[in-house]
Image 1 (cartoon, rainbow, N blue to C red):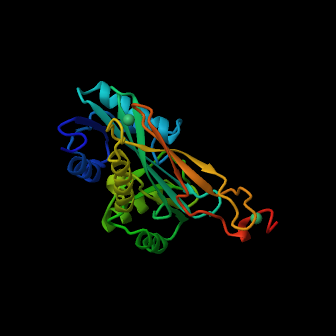
Image 2: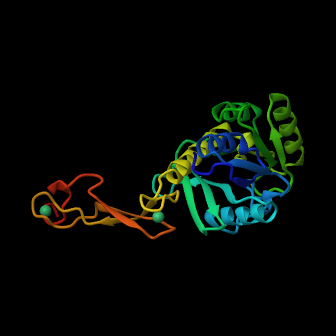
Length: 280
Ligand SMILES: [Zn+2]
Ligand SMILES: [Zn+2]
């Protein structure tokens, strides 16, 4: 028997994410995913800035699950939420995809995550159509769709669903006509159905979630026996001084409270080169 055998899981989504989330979740956990498209999830914020994202990724995902559970008779809820932007240190485009799971009966949540540079998130401001073609080719158009505006990123006039070269040319001409600077602002469409790269990242986050859920508590068998804390202090191999490296990981069951400490997940000692006493 699988962990969620015949349980109903509601998934509130507008942009076709069920294409990757539903089969993966159903196959591996045995549940039935009910897709709810009635609700406009753009109300929680969009990538194209018509509406600002006011909550954090996690809070938004929680809101979506709450709405989904309210509108169905499901036992469980899942939601997916992504974010894009330059990585604060690496300064490369960065995508974080989260798939959140919530069990309203036992009141516990677990999230799966993908985080990395695999994204085509970018934009270009230009007056030349040739430059738009070059940009489009670079970001994987037409499989990856584009969005265009006149002049700048906040312009009220916006053309979405650009998914072939005919529409691209037409969008360029319409935006140029409305432009006061003779420029257009073209950018990648980050909605899941318009962005196969993002869709693959959502799939990875979903797999991470399923992997976490399928770890069962050794005492009560509840799904989702996951790490709750990483404790630093791995000793130096020469002098034994505790370091900033992980010494143990603590796992805890959300249901019965059983916990386990797993020591030395990345090795027994830190090389003296990393020690602030031996190598200050
Ligand atoms: Zn337990
Ligand atoms: Zn040392």
